[in-house]
Image 1 (cartoon, rainbow, N blue to C red):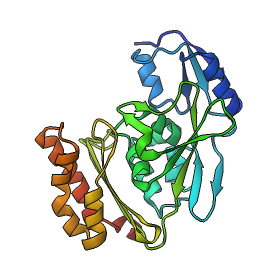
Image 2: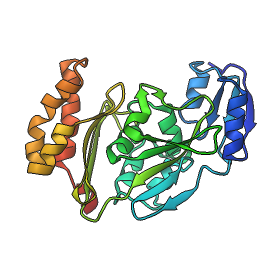
Image 3: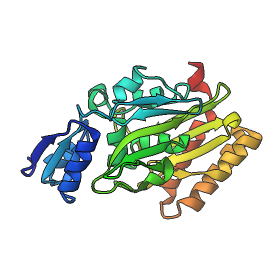
Length: 279
């Protein structure tokens, strides 16, 4: 199939992008890498009257850092993160996750911000950034940007807290300390496909960060606070013992097989905690 007719405009700045979106009155989509949007256009699942191309717009590739947070412009590609073109404040987690996204051709074009805005529940960045406690920076018509916690930014499958004239401008990622450990495990039928289940663990007691997350749940990623507390108190093996029960409690609408699949992904992440840093 081919897409419905649309007009294409190239924004030169972040502000111009938001102005074009506001003028379109809800009938526009943002084009960054296009790896999710273009297939949807061709299948006519999306039928915008206007596409706002931000690939070369200023304001989407800014980097800023302090002792606690590293801010990554939304326009950086998966491949650039994978290749270490920019700093990884997570001691390798971002690079590792980026390496596992789809195929290199997709990673060359797809962007972190675009993936978050698309909000596919099985997308790697949706789960990873929620587990890290990252902050999504959103710019609209006002002068001051809005900030959303990553775990609450995604409202459900393909749904976010973005307004019609808003764009993601940056992602603020907490710096992990030298004592931090992490693990990421996803289950999919073959390499390059979206995940059927994702398990993410981030443990940084020095920074007060202890998170265990189940992702690719067909909705928003789900934090497992009881499992995280058990991990901090008694270690990965003890945490594994309560994963299945907590997932059943927090995801009661999933069938038993799917609940177990998510429990397996989380347990495998717990079992490999810290291995990514030792490679």
